[in-house]
Image 1 (tube, rainbow, N blue to C red):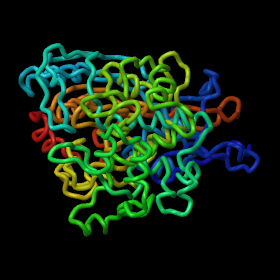
Image 2 (cartoon, helix red, strand yellow):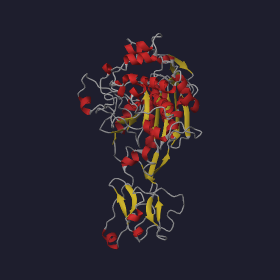
Image 3 (tube, rainbow, N blue to C red):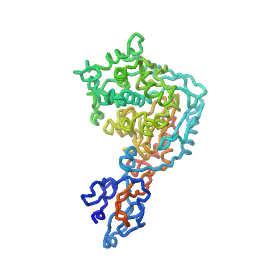
Image 4 (cartoon, rainbow, N blue to C red):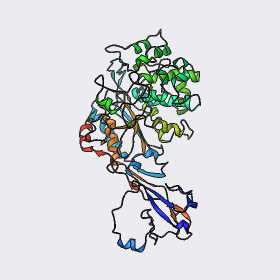
Length: 533
């Protein structure tokens, strides 16, 4: 009898299932139980019993006759809150199950228009994976690429025919997430170190310094507090890069001479930009985004693994396991080599090889054959925000990521953080359209994106064209696709046996901008982006 005294537990935003009132039954989690595997989870339950249970999972509470007579019908509320719908990376932990119908036809149609809009038939390649990491689309359009193009050396490149998904090109900032993967696979997964280990643990000479507090996590998330050095050779190089590009100087010496000194700190290691600092920057601008601290990781990795150079590390822990034979730190157009790698922007690869990275992420760290490259925990580490919902690139003009914004016309942007809701390890976090996005883009080199439990994409290009084309495709694709979510199981009482059982909730479709969680600026966004190259 005690088991029948159940009530609906609702926190005001999302139904968590039914909780038994008897203390002896407290072992039942208030978030609900997963299905036991039996297909008899709702056997014996009428479509609408006297105790108020409906087959679709709504109206689960026990009702008296008086209550049913006096209560007027109310508009059905969402069972899953917008916040839980949006945060799709946490669906598993919240006992939520998703369902997807990807609008591949819209994706392909918008991709086909890309070269036309950009003119001169410039090449783009795209690969799409579903929520399980199965490839559902792959195509290259256009034939031209700017061979030799380099923002580093001011070289516009030579328009060259023959672009396809196997064309090698520099990844620029898409190298950042690879730096995270390389560090974690070679140091963290092997037990040689950890993300929050201070530099002074590996190099004791920094024990009594402020820079000795810098950690790999800080390097990968733009939180070291170190000054910036600009990488361009035109109009002139800065001291750090002059040192690296001098054949007589070694890599470790350059990093220690021009990065690892307290005098180069502009903020305390680990400090996050506050809104007050953004509103009143001491030097007229405040951008925390910084390429050079990624190079500190090289010293840590080589010291801990005892390998000769980063080419060996990359091959052993990442590219050989994933079958990425053309992916390398020997990338001439960005002046990167295996001995002196530019960790934040120095990789070369191909569109179809790099597609294996978002595929691995959407599979929670597993390779195509099912073996593990990254643990699921470390995938979450890469996707975890390190900026308290902020953005290391404030006022940088990177507003045109998504048509769903935190404030009106955010794509301009009109606030300090643009459309970002955080930054992970080499991973940007814009709002997304029907759920969170984990991604990074590059001025050259395309864009990778994971929409957890929904889909994953890689775009590749080797041209000076902006990233507006990729973002336009993603915006139209996600708006046209259908994503639904439901609770995996509520705890209910079987009317026939009296036993506690699990019954799934109803699937509910996720709307664009997630039921008003973000402002829908699609009309102004589309007019600003869809015709832009």
